[in-house]
Image 1 (spheres, helix red, strand yellow):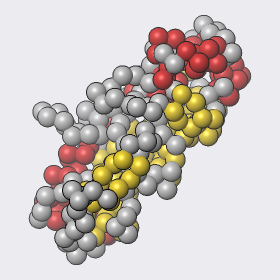
Image 2 (cartoon, helix red, strand yellow):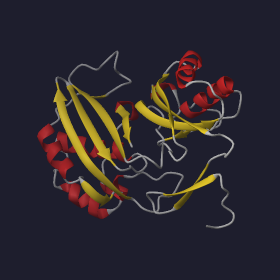
Image 3 (tube, helix red, strand yellow):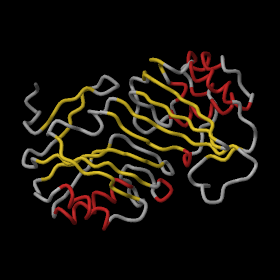
Image 4 (cartoon, one colour):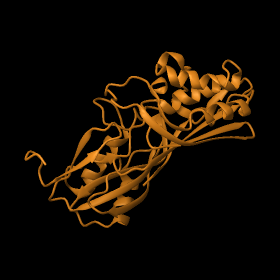
Length: 273
């Protein structure tokens, strides 16, 4: 191990095959885990940004008031502006002896509207919300009917034309397994060296006027889920054949896929460890 790594660091291999150094302040002995629900409409995404409200920053600032020291929380992954979470996982380190129950109560009392902490627990020092994750489950919801929603307009993607779920299910089967998903990724500020991911399941269910997509995988590229949904919707509309998914995948180019679905229908539903 290089001498530049301190005893307060842990080494982790990322999905891209890079060595990641996860810093942990040795004097902060408690590793606290949060399960968080939030309304993506009210924030400019998860990750802290300058001059924009984000979920991460709101929680950090609130924790600093509760614990009386600077706090950095580590989320299981980023979500974009408008994307919701039913169960985002995050962790932080502290030496404050406040109980998990009291931390949860204080957070839910002081956090801004649109963020709710559903559970607070304590983990061993090696747990990291991002690098310990085994699977992520995203849910996307479409309202498919003639009447646009009023109450759910920021919770679903409203599509007024018919969608054929049989064809979408057929297309989704080609996405299962381990593939290079470059065609379904969108360029981000951070370059991804390894675009290979594994999708374990895609379930598409129609319940009344709603169509629900549940996608589970070991990781996702930037806007990959929304890109997949946008392409499956084009198949459901009859604008693409289901078999085209194979060609799109093999092209390894974003040009071949359909436009991405809007953010408001997407939910980080759970993270599996």
